[in-house]
Length: 384
Image 1 (cartoon, rainbow, N blue to C red):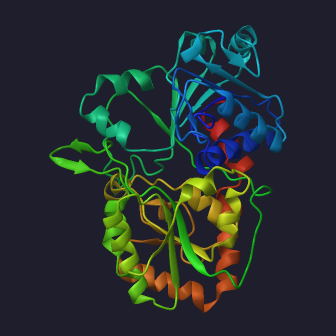
Image 2: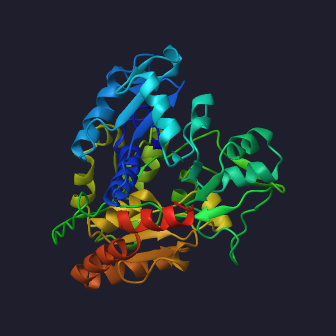
Image 3: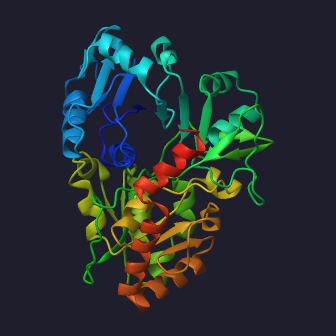
């Protein structure tokens, strides 16, 4: 059973994070269920706000589960409407699933566990955004400890934890198993297009309120701090087009980016159609992107689920180093950078033989990110 929030946050990126896990587990022959079961109001794009009406969230989950061949394998409980407010399955059937399941995977740590969840024999926390939890634990934050301690197993996308060069503090009794974002290669096929125009990325520009201070330093969550370090990129490669599909809301930020040669678009409308969302990747020539300061400075090893989507689509990726280059092949279809000169060198290599770079990108996905392969290793590591 996979606990998640793709109804609460019905956007393309969030939805595909879960769908790829569900497909990977299903491909291994497991009876897979997707469940949302918490008290958080969902976002409804029809009114552009969170609401206490689950109609849109439930319809979204039903539609995407049908699309990936898991029709009816889901449940949504709106605890903000009471413990019996269930959709897909009634509350009694949901509790029975908890009692019988081999494991409850709290993907993204998106669900605050309630008493029914403790009926499951295994509760696995899958940390898809590493570092913040560890900094909070190092600061002695009791709530973070309690959230993690409610699970018997913790897996993380921080694949560099405990390795030389990784400065993420690991305190407390927790043992971290390593995993990464799976990608279903059938649903994300190779999409070679020699005429594709732009190096793109998609995501958030500013996200406030998540910075963490530790040992006298502040580790930032918002990616705009990293984007600002590379504003000269379009000027240094004027023959290459760089498009940022980011929610840049402040006029002064838009003016700055556009004045430096970046083209801007909004991710909201695009990401509300999860099965149109992959078209954005297929139309791209390659990806250039940054990571959060937390992952960059502490070298957690995090690798983005969006980067995985580009690679599966056969699109070369130039991604800011978080240490992922220790375990993913780089230099042909995937490039890790620390400096502007390293970005420029990667662009030049891609453009020198674009077809070769695209084949190499797909090969990284096939070798290291394929859904069943990632999920098989994950299940073995957690003892299932």
